[in-house]
Structures are given as C-alpha cells and as structure tokens.
Length: 323
Image (tube, rainbow, N blue to C red):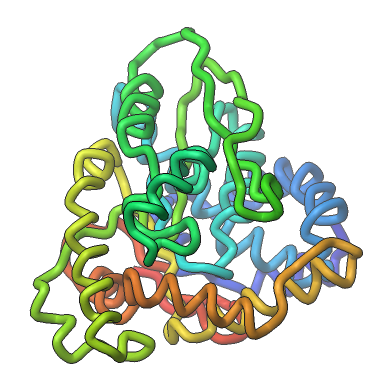
C-alpha cells in the first residue's frame, strides 16, 4: 500500500476502534493482512476509488469484523449476527466483505438474506390471490418463516459438521418476480450474517398509523400498514434466534430511494435490465407503506435496547455516529 494512503489512514479514527480494544500496532498489522484480498474484491466487484475503499476498510469494515469476531468468542455456539438495513444501504455488500475479512481472521462465515427466505413463486401467486394488496415480494407474510427458524437452529448448533443447505433467491426468475434458486451447501460455520430490510423489527402500537407519514395517506394505506404490522408477530420466533443485531441507519430514510435509483442506473449502464425511476419509486413506496422507517426503524435507533450497534449513514454514504 502506498505511503500517502497510509498517512491518510493514520489520521482517521473510527468510533469502532474503542469497541474492539486493540493496540494500534496490532490493528495496523491486521489491516495489512486483510488488505490484499479486500483490494481484489474491490477491483472486481465494488470498483471504488482507492482512497474511499481504504478508508471504508480502515474505519468500518475491519473494526466491525473484529467486533463481530469478539462477540463470537464470547459464546460457545456459532454467532447469529443480524444486520438490519433498508434498501440501498449496502447491507449485501457489507455482508460480502465481512465474510472475506472474517475468513482471513480464521473464521468461517456465511450470509443469509431475508430475501433467501421468500416463499416460492407459486406460493406467492396463491398469496396474491388471497390478498391482492401483496403486489410485490418484500412485506411481512411473503417469507417462509418456518424455513428460516429451522435454518438458524441448525446453524446455531455448536461443533456441528452437518451439511446445511442454504436457500438462495434468484431475483431474475419469472421476469423479475423471483423464485428459489440453487441451494448452497455449507458446514462448520462460526458466524452467520443474517441481513434484511426488516430483520429484528417488531410490531408497534397500531395507534401509530392514525397519523402516519407519507406514503401512508389513505384509509386503505393505513389498513395495509396495520395488517403488515400484525404480520410481524409471525416473525418474532425468527428474531429470537439472533444473538446480536446491527442497524445501518440512514439519517433520512428518503435517501434510500435515491440510492436505489442510482443502483439501477449503474446496472443499466452495464447492460443489465432494470426498473425506471418511476417504477423504483412505486416499489420503494410500497415497502414504506408496509413498514415505514419513521415508525419502525427510527425508534430502534434511539432505543436503549433491541439493537447492539447503530451505524449512522449520511447522505453521501459516509459514516455518522456509531453507538
């Protein structure tokens, strides 16, 4: 790594440094050991400029991986680490790079997305016939919760070499409606990163929807929001399997719409199919109508319990406070 970059990083201090409780020399040594594999991942996948990539690795990805490893060492069973983050916040990217770093540190980690637990395409067609308001996948009720419980229970067993088949969701199937793809066989996992846009979210007082923020506007919008809130009750046994929960918290939830549109623009510039800006807005509004971030996520960010770590994200995707 170039000297000029090392000098930039030396002046950067993450709020996560205190949590991992490591000497500067040891931290620098670990950073240099994981840098090559992370740099390769960046060149092939993320394609970030060198400086912001290195800053992210130095201030967020590495110390967060070290904190998760610390949590793993504090218990006998494999760690089920929840990651709660909205659309466009980079939760899947975060999980991917954490797996790389943890692997370099000697831990076998895997990711499981809430998306991977979607009911099959045919099951969701039946669900849509039963409730025409479920026009897209995503809200509570569109996942196979029992499958998730069984998976996390199997992954949580200590010293198990049993082969576990993780479902993987194929978003491209059935013209973008999505369906179950090819399973991934794993065994001997130390850490499970379970990420999703409402992982760990719990039901709230139904009275909160009487004066809900947009796009919950009409009486039918409010009823849909109340029904989705009630459906969250079915997910509580799944959340009970979490050992820890991290929240990626945009200071303004509306930024996720912009971030999602930017991601679609990038995908289309690479020749991939994608939604128009208006389609994305409809899609994101649908998610907000089902579980509005102001009602469900913001209280978690300010609560004294329920979340182990909050990482604030600014409009330019840089880090805010970490607590």
